Length: 130
Image 1 (cartoon, one colour):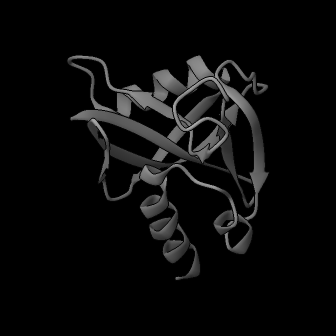
Image 2 (cartoon, rainbow, N blue to C red):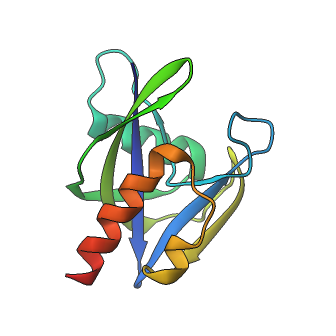
Image 3 (cartoon, helix red, strand yellow):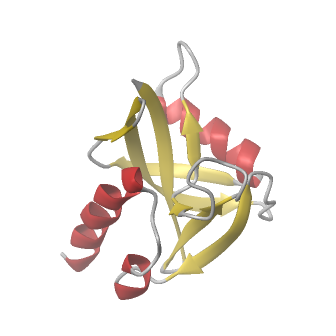
């Protein structure tokens, strides 16, 4: 099973979403940015590293959400999501086709999400409504 951490990055009432580059598996689908855990690395350490590498920005982890497991033949992916706060830095797209800051709610639900991210979107929207 591949373990992946992702960040739901909040800033001024908006959330950052990223479109996978077309060359990757599930190309042009939308996701919360993040990446695979390295050996010996915690999920929280991973998300700080991945966001610096992929987007060039600093974040602060606010809270974890529920990890999910998705079968994407031939592998299983355990996605470990964190709600995060944008801290600083201009965004640099090192790994994505596009990024958007969107309002939580209906707009967030309308993207063509990677399968592993769908349960994360659902949980996050429930939190936003409560």
